[in-house]
Image (cartoon, rainbow, N blue to C red; front, side, top):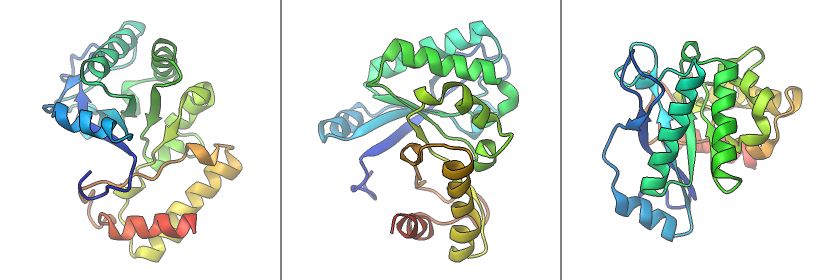
Amino acid sequence: QAQAPQYNYAAYTVAVGNGSGNNGTVTMDTAVVQDDVNNWIASGRWITLMIGGSAASSGGAGQINLTTADEVTNFVNSTIGICKQYGFQGVDIDLEDSSLWTTTTMSSAISQLRTQKGANFSIAINPGPYQMRSGGAYLAVFDQVGDYIDLISGQWYSQAGESDSWFINSFILPDITSFVGSLGIPASKLMMGCSNITCGDGAPSWPTTYCTAFTDLVG
């Protein structure tokens, strides 16, 4: 937030599960600074709860299981509870390990969140780019409940590249062209998020390379 005051959307902290025995319930992984949330909202900007991350993958301390109807119910209820408690205006779903969920269960979770929270509650997904390509797990979810998904924030920032030009021309542009052209995903639903840490060996650093790519894309 301090580094990027021009942005009006942020995913705050992380909610995770509790390991391999998780029943779908998520809890806060870090303490919420309520003043941060309140000040962001008071400034007219949007703040959402991020759920998942690498810790929520199989074997991780924060593993989230979403394979049964009961787990979906627990996931939805606990997510809504956290959002109500702290005032989050939406969710950013970052469940990277698709072996822990199915198209049916993820679609059901998104559908229930939309039904219970309504149109003024934003729902974003944060897939790895390959998961939105043809045959990808999140693309299958989008095909089912795309109308309920407001934003897709592909994790392009975690991709190591050889240079700025490689990152832009060989990685981002082909994906954007495919998403909007071949797959028919509305451009208005695509979001390029910047991480405030370097993700992966040789990944584009925040903010120089990544924001250069964004500037080049929007012209």
